[in-house]
Length: 462
Image (tube, rainbow, N blue to C red; front, side, top):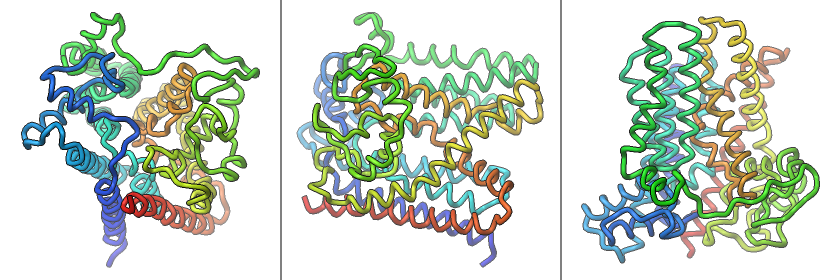
C-alpha cells in the first residue's frame, strides 16, 4: 500500500468509526438540550407556524421544525409517537453530521499543505469531537445550522478562488437557509461579506464589486421574503426580528462580582480573563442550579474548553448526567491531552489573523488570495466575538456553549495545520515534535471515543 492510499484509508477509517459512534448514540438517546420536537408537533397539529412567544423554543426560526413536520406527515408518523420522532430526527441529524465531516474531508484534501499527517490529525480531531458527536445525536436544530453555515463558507471559499457566480449564489442560499434555522448563522453571512469586500477593494474589478455588493442584500431579501424565517412577521407583531426565551441582564462590573440568572458571567475580569484549569481538573463537571456550582462555571473560556472536549462535562441533558465522581478520571485525562491541540488551534488562529492583517495593510493581491481574503479568520473571530457578547448579554452559564462557535468549524483544522507548520519551522527537531503530537492526538481520539462510548452504555442501561 503506497503512502497516498494509506492516508485515504485512514480518512475513511476515521469517518467510519466516528459514524458508528454517532449512530449508536442516536439510537439509544431519548433526550436533548432543548425540546425542539414540541415545535414540530405544534406545526403538525395547528397547521401553522407558531409565534415566538407560544412555547419555550418557539422563538427560533422554523426551518428545522417545519422540515420535521413535513417528514413526519409524509411518513405517517402520529403526533403522539414521540419516541419514533426522536429516533428519526436524531438519525437525520447523524446523516447531516456525516455530510459535514465529508465536507471537512474534501476541504482538507483541497488545501495545498504538503504535510498529510497534520491533515489526518486535524480531520480526526473534528470527526471525533465529543461535543459535535453529542449534538449530532440530539433532536435539535444545531446540526442543520452548523451544516448549512459550513456549506455557505465552503461555497464562498470556492467563489473567492474561481470567481464563478454559481458558487456565490450557492453561498447566499445556504447562509439564508442557515439563518432560517438558527439566527446566529447571520455571523457567517457577515464574515463572508467582509471577505468578499476585501477581494473587491484589493482586486478592483467591476465584476467582483458587483457581486460583493449583492451578497448581504440578497441574503436579507430571501430572509424577509421567506415566511418560515418569521423575521418579517416577528417585526410586525413584536417589534423585533428575533426573540429569545431568556431575559437580558445588566452589564457586569469590570472586577466587582454580581450574581444574576444562573451564573454565568459575574464580572468581566472573572468571565473573560480567566482560564480556571486547576479547578476544572479538581471538579471536571458542571452543576446546573442557581447555587453550589463550581468556580469554573463563571469562566467563559473554561466552559468553552470543557464543553468542547467532553460529552460528560455539561451534565446535561438530564439523562446524560452522571452520579458522584463517575467518569471523572476519563474526563480529567481528556482535559490534559486536549491542551496541546487546542493551544495549537488558537496559535494558528492568531498567526493566520496576524498574517492576514499585515498582508491587507500591504495590499498584496497575490498573498491575500493565498489567504482566502481572510474568510476563515473573519468568520472564526466573528463567532468568538459573538459568544463573548452573547454571554455578556444574558450572563447565564447555559449560553456559554462551544457549539455556538461550531458554524466556524471549517476554520479549526486549517488553523491547527497552520500552527503545526509554523511550530515545525522554528524547531530544530521536527521529527520529535511530530512524534509527540501524533501520540497526544492518538491518545486524545481514544479518550474521546471512550467518552462517547461510556455515554452510549449509560443511556442503553436506561
